[in-house]
Length: 337
Image (cartoon, rainbow, N blue to C red; front, side, top):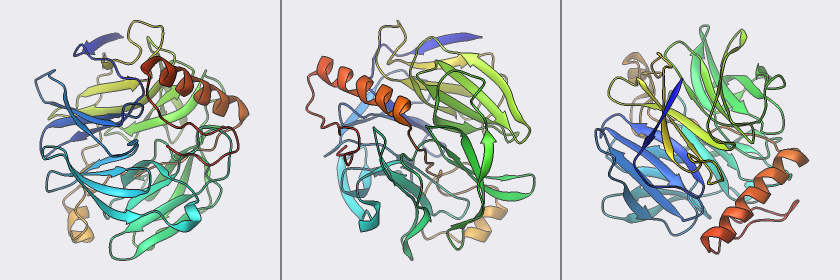
């Protein structure tokens, strides 16, 4: 396996990698610097726009804009014009701000609470037509979710940073889930569940924070593990017109490639072609028949003390080194960003 650096830039806290298939752009955020970045396909020139508060979840739309999770709600961002407009405030019951976000096969948004340390949280479904609906009241930190049809069943996958990746039977039309089960057991590898991406064969590629691994799970369990050249990878996605390039981002750190955008060479797999962009007014059944889905679904995770402390200390260290005034919550307190 080989790792190739893309561009010469370094991120303080890279997150939310997503490929925009319509614009042929690779998007990602730097949480510490409150910036959204992108690369045009075939170029390593970094494009940047600043957001009013720390961005986390990021989802492309059909009209070239982005949905982005900010401090007080979900926003629609025009990255080229640097215009940001509130789509919806978070539900009061979330009791904080959202983290990762993506979409289901019908174009509904999934997101949930951000916690950088152990605290209560929940995962939510959102539709512009029907508002917010609670999915799971026991999800602390939403991270790395995916929606897919696995073995013929509509499935929502949610990573729990404290433990495992879980799977739910899922109804996109009603915003409901069935009983969760373990989908990816990380107990045999180092690290905690973070961002993820699906390949065309239904394999879930997962970045394991504080473990330096990228692992692949299928419905039968752990299938592959790749040791990465940095301790704290945060997200992964397939990109390129053929979805044959696998990218990874991470937090800054002592390793040479920490904080860099890298391409993992030698995977020899392609991304899930059903992944798409947001179009809330689209007919979901017609879009399903066309083989795509309008959003990329937001996943959730729950921190235990060890994982929460590692993430909290890492963010504080990056914050101090960068000189940014990002408010980081103390253990047990509500996340402010």
